[in-house]
Amino acid sequence: MKKKKISFPSALTVLFIVLIFAAILTAIVPSGLYSKLTYNADHDVFEITTPDGDVTEMAPTQETLDELGVTGNLNKFLDGSISKPIAVPGTYQKVEQQPQGVFKILLAAIKGVYDTIDIILFVFILGGCIGVLNYMGAFNAAIAALSKVTKGKEYILIILITIIIAAGGTTFGLAEETIALYPILVPVFLAAGYDVMVCIAAIYMGSSIGTMFPTINPFSVGNASNAAGISLADGMGIRGIALVLGIIITLIYILRYAKKVKDDPSKSICYDQYEYHLQKYGHQGEVPEFTGKMKLSLLVFGVSFGVLVWGLVSQGWWFDNMTALFLACAVLLAFTSGIGEKNFMDQFIGGAADLMGVALVVGVARGINVILEDGMISDTILEFFSKAISGMNPILFIILMMLVFIVLGFFISSSSGLAVLSIPIMAPLADTVGVSRSAIVSAYAYGLGLISFITPTGLILASLAMVDVTYDKWLKFIMPLMGMTTVFSAIMLIIQLYV
Image (cartoon, helix red, strand yellow):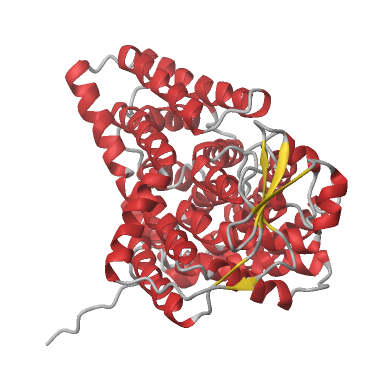
């Protein structure tokens, strides 16, 4: 009898397991609360709510923050960048135990969806736009057209593919959509004298570096910033610099390997499959025509992200405005795509449906925080870690945070799921050691990005399967780059502490 292959559970299943585990913890871990500090803009006062529910008002000044021992920029409270209640150090008190039962678990998942409906709706609208563009073949046709332009100078193709896909990763989380590019690009790279590993590296690492150093990616840095109670624009500048430098490091690594393979095919990590790959992929299939409608639709989509950046940076937009923007983008795509009203709606709804899993992950992950909060053990966990890192050097702290997120990212590869699950607990720890919450968001993004290079729970196995390359060969190729990127990420985190 053939044994059934054991596979790692999906992100949603993992989150439900964690949800149940969190409920069990509410019966084991002592309940407790900190006094919480919030800024009341209507009355221009700080409000401190004690574990007993008593509310005290204090002047919204830096002296008040210093007196309470709350590290943070006063302006971040006043301008609404820090909107979530902040734990006041040294005020932790134990309270009556509040264990969460089976019914509470179910309610927590539902409440989690309610609490994140603004994010979920944005995910659906964005997914609908991407679904229409994928149906048109706009992304694939643009790549095919690009390969024609670079014919004879294929190294330029490596550079452009990596940069374009990284741009998609840093803005709207381009990842799973890249799977469709392999059948188009592998023949191009083989014809240029490269191997399939160069193609995988350009596509997969372009996406990975883009999502690892996010600027406005709503699924990662958007969720993480929201969970940390800070603005999406906070830390965007330093992550943008890290993105550019990360792309350069990645390109140098890929181009050096590509040149080595082009000069001597036997140097290829996949050399034992060289003839097989040539036979299977060594011819260019039908190239999709890059039509005017495709160009116009991609222009509309691209301009929408430009407007999004402007709105986030200069207008303080959040998910309601972002959703409205891409709803407008969808309306324009209905006209520019030229696929007909009924077909457009089918593809738009289908694209939104493709991201149902992402939406549920966001909601269920928030449900875990609901369980911890209702069970009143979030602050107990925070108190434990606060004592553990008491007096810890900020540099050591932020490096440790990145390592923690590398481990967490192995089990929960969903960027949105990990963000809303972990950031509400991790971000307040930064306050106790004088580290900005935006640095915690960066540590989360870098850690999750690094583990995505190799984690079997992510996209890499599906990508390798597309071109018949085994996992061990990918590890041999990527581990040196992963080591360099880890050191680089740590340096960028340290720099962020002082800018």
